[in-house]
Image (cartoon, rainbow, N blue to C red; front, side, top):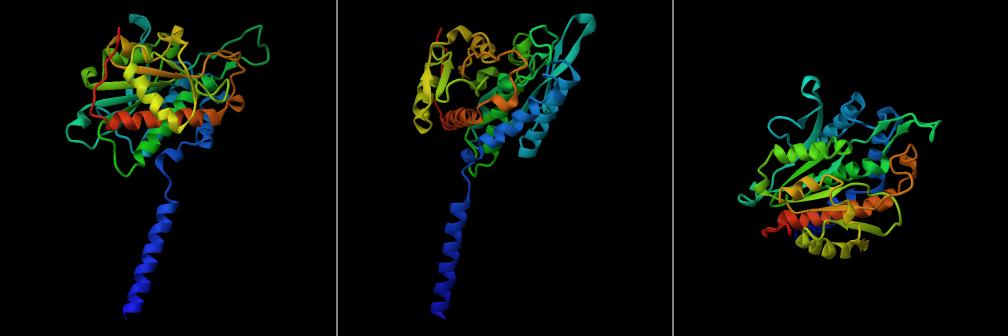
Length: 314
């Protein structure tokens, strides 16, 4: 009887070890294949370059919303959309920031918010003598890539057995190409108080140029976030460069910095197909996007479990 009991317990132990070995770490769900799938959809000709406010832009927002719902993220104030008005007073139109909320696990720190964001819109179709055969500016790198990163991170965080201490708000901004309209609107009408927002991590264009090159923009403004990123990058091994602060006001991190919310911008630099019909999904480097998205995940995980507060340096 003792022998049978021992064999049974050993079997249970072996099964447990096998299941643990088969368990995929959440960060490992952030893969080139997953990112490529999202980019393929968002940068498809069917979405006509995702300009907002247009039905095609609405389709892109709806896609992100469906993904957030499928991961189990929660709405904010009963909705996954923050409506953003655009246009003249007598002809206002609406597009959306798409939001998904993951509540933190710590009774105190869950009142503090980390924002992970990217803009989903692009410039839409244009007829141009320079591109007579193709008028759709698909925006695969700019910025289907960053939006895919936000979705991949959102799923990874929802798969964690132990939720992070701080809450995380995932945002796909609309209207970046109109002049940071969606992110500016959020900062003027925050869904959670900005004084409780500890940091903003922005991904915009993360899938082109040299495979190991990554620019970190606004690091001088947020030196504590720079230090965190450099430490977390030891797990990834990107070549970090800091000489692109000419873009410090050019993406959705900027309105947060202006409101004294620490923020950094993960960016792989301008390229020859930027804002052209040649920014297609089949030409991006999804392996590079995977590395950067995983790096942002590690940054976010550290920040979301850290009790320290960070400052913006003027």
